[in-house]
Image (cartoon, rainbow, N blue to C red; front, side):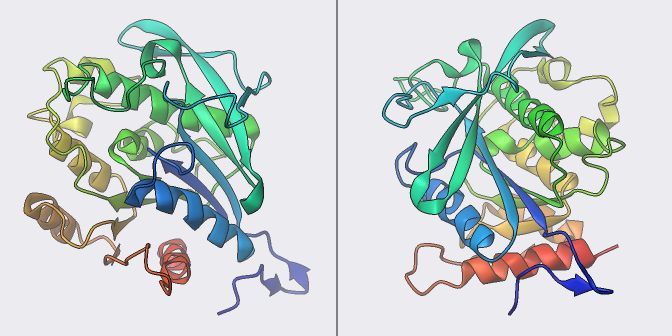
Length: 286
């Protein structure tokens, strides 16, 4: 399969652009299924002729000096209102030299300075996780706008990226940067047992989102947040061999294009090629 840019009508076509929005990327966080895929999938796709950008949250446990993170001043300086409070958006970047790729980090002292990812030292979910996820998703979209980089595919993985499909389809759908973007969602069983506050709708709502757009968030919990992400996606990838049955039922009912589980850790895995084929299938679908 030739994944290099095609020559059409005697002209070189632009390469497909894929935006990766991940909750974890190795080696900035310990190796897990999500962080490993967040690390090696973009590299593999880039090596096959596609343009990529990768984003993740700048959790407080990431050592900035060791990982050589630095703030991107020209991208920082925006504010995002969450729960009626202006929150400064700080963008940092680091390079994975062996992969010849950069990773952008969404940072905010209120949301990501703490030394844990999703749960505190007592293994209890943070009570502002919905705000953190909202800030992260909107921070990614605003930063990509500022980069003036138009993604064809936006591939989300990890629960903290689950608000992005909603915001993309309801707030940014008319923006020239995102007008043609398609969302691919990798789903895992992580974060499904979270319980959010009853005021989640007021916290995550912004102009352009109506109450009926987020009806599925009743009750407000992790599995319904995953369902919300499915509702506004264009294709689903099974990140685990067996997803929560309730989530599987929603995926099947949606009639969205799906790609079954592929073991990304197997030495002879062909997941990069199969993911690329899936991207092409989504882009070809009118």
